[in-house]
Image (cartoon, rainbow, N blue to C red; front, side, top):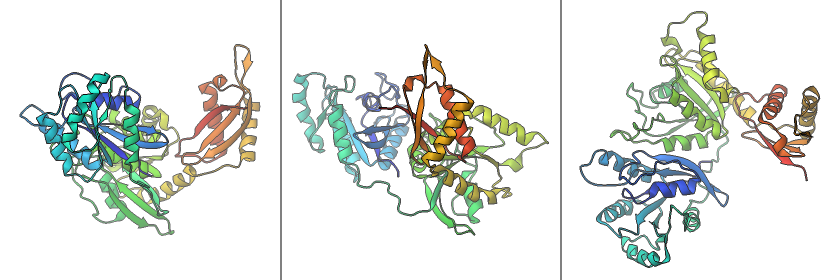
Amino acid sequence: MAKPIVAIVGRPNVGKSTIFNRIAGERISIVEDTPGVTRDRIYTNSEWLGHPFSMIDTGGIAVGDEPLVQQISEQAEIAIDEADVIVFVVSVREGVTDADEKVAKILYRTNKPVILAVNKVDNPEQRAQIYDFYSLGFGDPIPVAGTHGIGTGDLLDAIVKNFPENAGDEEDDSIKFSFIGRPNVGKSSLVNAILGEERVIVSGIEGTTRDAVDTKFTTADGSEFTMIDTAGIRKKGKVYENTEKYSVMRALRAIDRSDVVVMVLNAEEGIREQDKHVAGYAHEAGKGIIIAVNKWDAIKKNTHSLNDFTAAIRQEFQYLSYAPIIFVSAKTHQRLGELPALIKRINENHGRRIQSAVLNDVIMDALAYNPTPTDNGRRLRVYYTTQVATKPPTFVIFVNDPELMHFSYERFLENRIREAFDFEGTPVHLIERKRK
């Protein structure tokens, strides 16, 4: 299920990034008293009262001849197009400005719910000034002070109240997977090669794919798949090009909808820092993951090439040690026939459930092989383990004191679980709880 998307928009320097950081609970966006500092869309996941959502902080919508103004405005409009709910931020200190009214005209053209947040209301005397903002035509303004957190709860209540019902529900039972990666690694070519037809535009120009394209197909064994092709996730600073009609947020939405994510690397270019960031999105989302090295036909190889590239991946993607690696070529179709079967197997692993009796036998054997550690004379005691969720497989370990569980011993237990059961391609989450 895809999370609802909230876009925070407004003219520059009204405190959008401060509100974004307050809701996110951490300092993510750059905050500076200079208009235009936030030049590209910043995104994060958040939650309020059991309602998870994704959030975009945008550069301000502005007019004029200043550098990057047009691009920043385009980015904000793209974010508006992607959003389910829009938070329109204004500032009580300047009152209603011409720029606010121009932003309002842009928002009038959308059919999305718009929540008007009047920022920088730091004291009760300023609350009387918020009534001027009724003239913008978006109903009751909500007074907030992003710096101090005043009014944040009221704002979040209004946001979740406007979420679409059953947003992102998926009704079909097909295995959903997406290709993710930097621009120009060959994701669209892989889509076409698997389908055997030119279903999406393929080009050597970065960012040709402007939207997410869902394609359903059935393999010879009757397995049904839904393939979600996404545009490349761009580096910050390259996102706001004039021709860009797709955002990182939509790629993250595709990841949310996927059961399995195929992380595509370019064999010719090797591993880039951005590749690790892109893969991190899928890992943090708890998705099944496959690493596909594309354009394997295009490089000069020797007897050590495959092992050397595999070792480099394992070194650079240490947090993805569970992910299988497949070397493919969209051009020659090398090993592409193996990909659907691999995706199906990873999806099965992602949804695997282990009986508690069998699971506890494995844990008890692990404890006998490697006794629990001690801390200041206190020994960790493990009483019982049970699986509480799938996709990803999640296990609760009941112990005498969760603080005694060192991360290295938790890793040892995870490895023993992986050795006993096939969880290749999926993260495994362990949660320690004190037995009552």
